[in-house]
Amino acid sequence: MTAGIIGAAVAQYPFGWLSDRIDRRWALITATSGAVGAGAFLSFLGDLGPNFAYAGIFMFGAFALPLYSLSAAHANDFAHPGEYVEISIAVILTFSAGALFGPTIVSVVIENYGSRGFFLYTSVCHAVLILFVLYRMTRRAVVPAEQRSPFIALLRTSPAIFRLGRNASGNRETTD
Image (cartoon, rainbow, N blue to C red; front, side, top):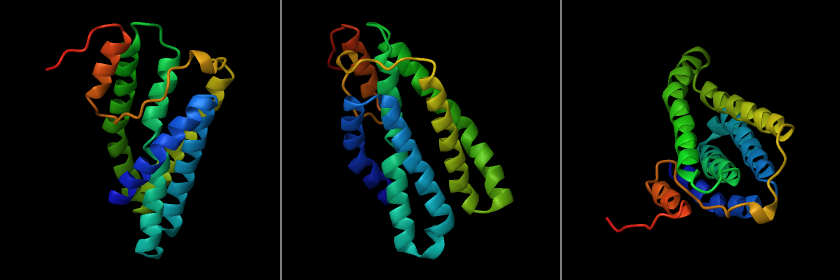
């Protein structure tokens, strides 16, 4: 767990920096591709010893965990003033649906394919995300860089997201 969290901490800001300079969807595709690769690495090489497992988990955390912040930043690029809280709610709801159904599905995968199935499952899920982002790129133009809000690293469960939403919509932040 520590290796994955350290990987996420190391990669969060470089991915944010990258997403502020290029189309965020390409940053999403890059991070998601890394998560696919890390999942495959863990599925096939993670049992070669603890160093392989630690390296794979580090890579998985570095690529998979920034996806939430990148997705939220991309969604907020299309929000109008006053819509940031609604966008945050939609992103959290989507994350929650995955948190609800994912463990049930992956338990069936692990039961049928063993422990290697876990990271193969995550690789398939990330590959589907890549396909979805590529599809969406054909449906909507990129937001010009000068109209995008800067990337802010957020935890998926951080209550800070609500303070940011209040501030973005023009409400004065209060001290609780």
